[in-house]
Amino acid sequence: MGRGRAKAKQTKVARELKYSSQPTDFAALQRELSGGKSDEGHENGDRFDDSSEDEYDDYRR
Image 1 (cartoon, one colour):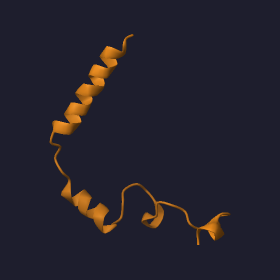
Image 2: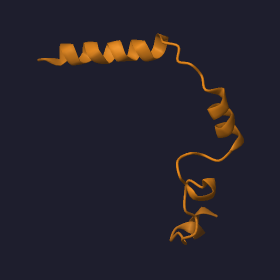
Image 3: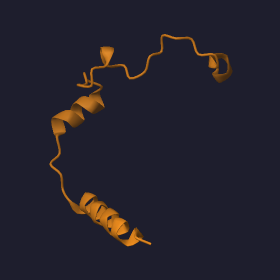
Image 4: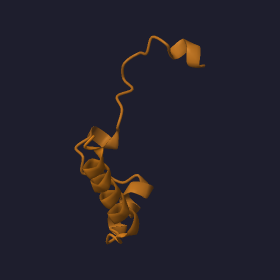
């Protein structure tokens, strides 16, 4: 019981996301696709730290 209101809100949000047209930031898209410098504060644009040795590294090769 009480699920109707929550489901209606989820449906409303889903419709807004599906049918609304957001302005596209082509400059940000170009930076992302070209691997340019991000604004997230990662060093050298790396997302993951590969400096540590992984204990399962031998099994992946």
